[in-house]
Image (tube, rainbow, N blue to C red; front, side, top):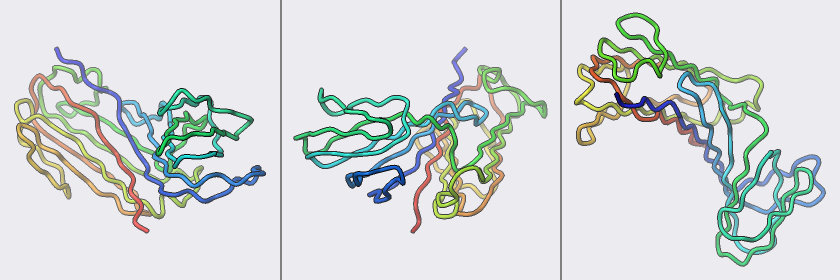
Length: 217
């Protein structure tokens, strides 16, 4: 029996952050960052981490991290409260920080049914029957609304046609990639969504659901 992959990835792409935190004395260095959220198979957030990238030189950054790591070199990251500094000669310098917060701008709820009965993702591994996956996307009002109001979500699932037939997903774009079908949905900024994917499955296995947030402004 193949293992059902229960790790899901959501990413936000934020280019050249210029905001200076209220608590900061020294302005942060311009950077690019990508925010990744690791979710369980039902959409609960496990952790959120940020990959920050900078040009060479003296770098000052701020973040509410409980863990940081240098992804480029052996140079030590100097941490004082929420302030991170490092002096690097690398043309491109990357470091990763795991956020203390586990809140994303969207609430993601993922449910599974097999033969019209709700079932957990781990229980689906190797099963056969009529599968339905439902994904609900709503605003997380506890998070700054700038992302919800200005970022489009792209949600994609990949199903192997050797194991999944009669694939239906209203309003989706469905593309072939070898033996796989890639089911993609777009959620416009400021909008909630209810997405469903159904298929007849045998010896079911599935890779990660991927959710990417892309700025439209």
